[in-house]
Length: 175
Image 1 (tube, rainbow, N blue to C red):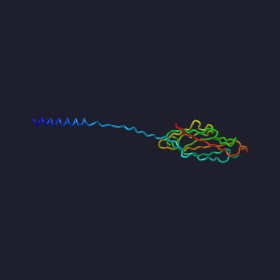
Image 2 (cartoon, rainbow, N blue to C red; image 1 turned 90 degrees about the vertical axis):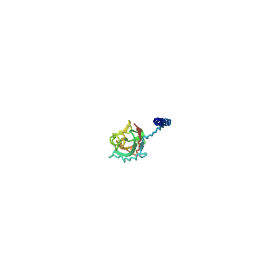
Image 3 (tube, one colour; image 1 turned 30 degrees about the horizontal axis):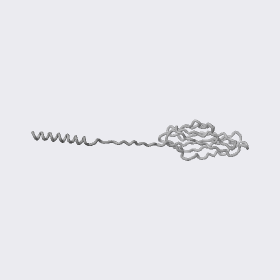
Image 4 (cartoon, rainbow, N blue to C red; image 1 turned 60 degrees about the horizontal axis):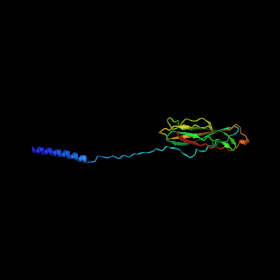
């Protein structure tokens, strides 16, 4: 009987002693770390300027000329393009001006490829005044923007001959 009591006491001591040791160990502690990363909004032209557009000569037989230039635009979100509607976008030579119209096109439609709806020919002072939307498609981060210009003259006279120039500036804004 003594051995049984001794065995029970020994068993109780081992069980409670282990419990006391387990209770004496401090609980695990945690440390949190907040991590953040910002994906920059990308809107960047592939070049500083569109290539120059040379319309050639307007003559008595050819009173209208059309030309275009394209430039790649890299984006990672939907954007709007607005144009300069000031007199600097109108073809002029001194006091003389030509009827100046612009339109935009893209290599994508905004459905399966980054792009948008083509604009119609508009006078320099109303050209995309309310903006032209470009829809970004996540798998396509670039769009080829095609700027077209049309110059027209009603009557060619000695006093309106000469070199006519204009500068059109397209500005990209986030939607």
